[in-house]
Image 1 (tube, rainbow, N blue to C red):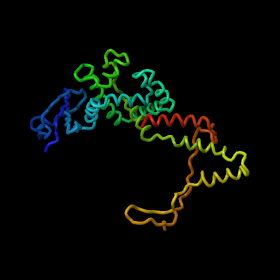
Image 2: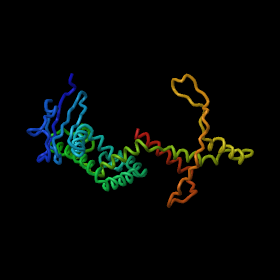
Image 3: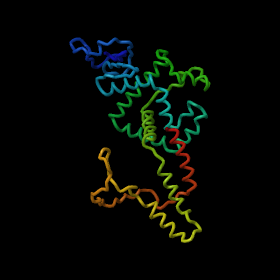
Image 4: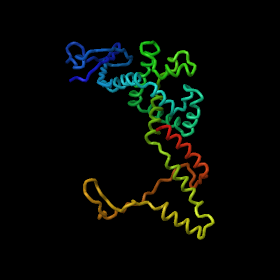
Length: 298
């Protein structure tokens, strides 16, 4: 039973290679009914997009550059609004599209250094010929989608069609802007913050700074505080000294001798003053901002 529901063929004028010419082994994809055909400048050979149930695309290309260009076009047709929001979030440019309602989000993103991270990622991509070509082709595919929308060959994304009148835009197509390598880096920066950015270090530092406020005025104040440091803060060990595995039926105390690892000597941080104390009020305020930021990222 076939799951193929449609195939879209992407071609380019003047392809430098074509495996479907006379004499070549015919591709099984050509036996599937073709439903769309688009011309993407920059493709080196025909690229086939086969959609299965649920309109899930499978893209077949001769090389990675063509694959990236076609992927940019295909994904933009389904997810351009999301891609636009993702790049704008790290660049601090949501308010350009959404107005003052998003201004506080832009201010927070810039204060957290997201725009700086995106710019550094762009610099690294520009210095890498392989990835700059791949991501540049991906952006080119997105831009071809934008061109098709502006030329009324594809519909405007529903999000812009709905937002346009609310934001005072006469033509929603004006809200669509092209992608560059910097925008691809910005998407990467947003993913970096969403998948790998956590704010626990700020909360732990705030807790550490608050330790000095414990037992103030109590008998043996210094002794109590020293005990708090030794017994609670600096005590890092498993809650239960056992080892177990699912299905073994029981947990038992580990018989393996402890491994004595050599102490780790962290290299000194260049250009940073040592022993700088951050005011507790500042840490608490920053922690609150970061919690709101994490909620926004989901």
